[in-house]
Image (cartoon, protein in one colour):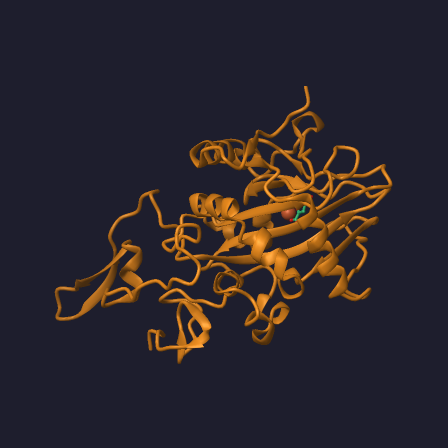
Length: 327
Ligand SMILES: O=C(O)CCC(=O)C(=O)O
Ligand SMILES: [Fe+2]
């Protein structure tokens, strides 16, 4: 029997969703957004991108017959405000990436109070300043553990509209960690640091290019080859979304149908890893200022106490003046 992913409705318990996601490496979230919104996002993307940007695929990553548009956060505010910042997706991202500063529980516009720790690096509580016994001091690890936080916050990774057209072949099955290889291979115990989401901008079916996900492959050794009967197709109605983890094998599917498939992809990446797409070129400050505070923050216009700071800017929102850099 063909494999499948578990599907959830928006109202179902986050614990059950996270359990399935950690077990299978992927889940389907049904009907999270109205289908009309998907058309509005598409119209906004088309209105604000050129033919040149709507480049056709033609290599192993984007097989011929596929079309992609990047930089979505800079050309579609609806994509940012209503899909990327969808409350259910942020709840899932918070539960998977375990940021110190969650996105789903802090109301938009409310700033984080300044932390009172003397030394910003100790806020993760895995480091402490100790006397070295010789009149000096040293930063020392003070324990590990799985409880988190795994990052200070998370940012948008890549944002792409992915259209699979008639005759397109299967995308190469891959893990999102590939963008950080070979470096992450040196860190086998690394905590989860990427959550990927594909929003269905049209119906997703196994015959029109639905994302293929290999349930359980997030627990496999990386040299195992997936067999056809181990692959699930993320079939779902327009307005639904499929989410997967960084070590889950996946790829877009082949299409034999004229109607193809349209997806709006977004990844959420821990703040300490480089964002896959350069969001500060894709969404320059004059464009970002038109987005909400939460929109600006998820793009990456914020910093942790130790990474990404800009002197003279507010750590919570680098588009504002402030004095939050550690130096
Ligand atoms: O479009 C899909 O179905 C998969 C896309 C993907 O794997 C990616 O963008 O990394
Ligand atoms: Fe991928």
